[in-house]
Image (tube, rainbow, N blue to C red; front, side):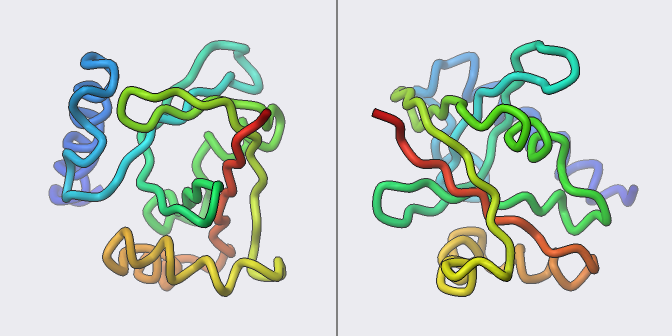
Length: 146
């Protein structure tokens, strides 16, 4: 891992720590100005609670997050957790919302329309990440329940 990647990972972890410790008072737009949510889920193997801070875009009522993992050949672990247990919770600022997660891929009819939404919010980084890997990067739709 390059030094710049290591620093980026440390910054992301610090951002998530601040977001969680302030219960969303600080953190919604802390790092790079991107809108960020906290995804609260359960580990599929451990059964333990897991939280991940993710940049998101909106599409109607749905929140969209991207399983880019920085363009790694492997998707992030949180994607497998969502596929195993799709009923999760998100926190946007101080508001928590129960949602159902659904991973979408390029063969999904909405994917091509949604890619510019998520990539624009992340200032073109997802397109860069897709160039680095041969796996199709999933856009995960988080739809409020109830």
